[in-house]
Length: 486
Image 1 (tube, rainbow, N blue to C red):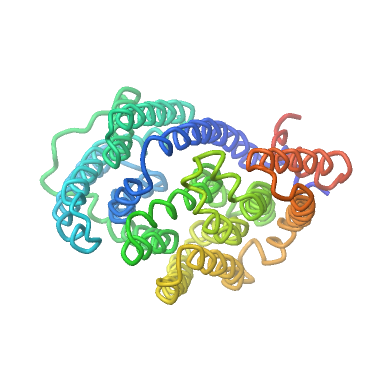
Image 2 (tube, one colour):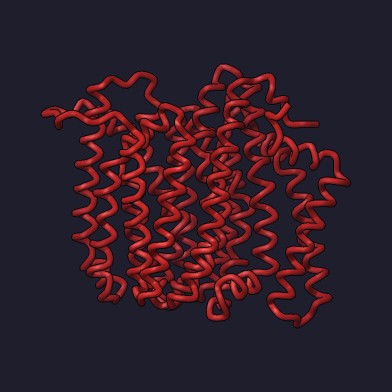
């Protein structure tokens, strides 16, 4: 049975069109990122990647607080006056400038902590991105508020492509870790130029009293949750960099980046759409339930097969895509795969808590998962990168399942809905895994290219078989791509 008939529900149909647009953009970005990663991995050493990764762990945590949740407030507030828009812009700009100064001031401390002198200059340089971001965050939020997603998608594509090209050029010139910092700076600058050129609204003079200050408590709550999620996803990088060194972090970080591709380019970009749609369906529990199940099912059809591939052909993926010197990260990529497989559960529960205004549930669940991840990293910090990755993968998978226990009877969805959404993708992924293991066993000691091609062939046959031989799976897959083409 199809999950729902989208034609009967206008918000779901609108969300379908928006999700297709977002996913189209993300697929393009994914292709560009893979091409950029493959190229940069051959131009930049694991050691330089590790040095950049040390700076990125600090920059990334600060990045969570770059707009203090004020962009989300702009998107969700039903009515926004001209004075509020102006106050929000200037408050974001000032907070961005303060954050840039704060990050720059931590450069020396970070360098001493990681025992890496290059960080004294690299961290302050990366901090400039907060100043640039503060100047365009509210204008970008206004474009989203006006549902100008097509323009936003084009702006993001331009920024992403130009920053990748700039990084490759800098790497060719021997920039090393600085080439990766160049990518971040160019991306933010290109976003700012694109947003300011497309958004005609302009801020007025800086107000003497910020009416936007009243939005800070709500924004702070959202930022706190985002900060906990960041720690949950990245604390392992912090531990590897501090206790195992830049070289180990470079290897670990590239493998973790490959593992996170389905999340960064598919799951995360759909979050705002999912939350806003669930809010619009607050008066229609059945509609909200159908949409939530559909989104979980969408992502499960991506993350479960990807996790199986990461687990079975991790060495082959890294050797063919990045080169032989990155093959040491195979244990990391396969170790993280359980958490990638069940990430849709974690994200969908977060969407539910945000949409229903359950900030306490959101914060408590994020805090619980973060504590588990930190404890796992602390316990395994001297056991090597593969052991840390396995611990994180299992912790994230168990944490995703545990989140189902936070769903209440009054919510429009239940744990049973999550299991129903996962059922067919999980069975199909299990079949894919068994087939892959059998074929790879027959290939024996064949080269990485041959084994990866065999894996790709098995995946293609698996998808064709699911489509042709399993009507239930075919219905779900058709809905994901054709649900509003009736």
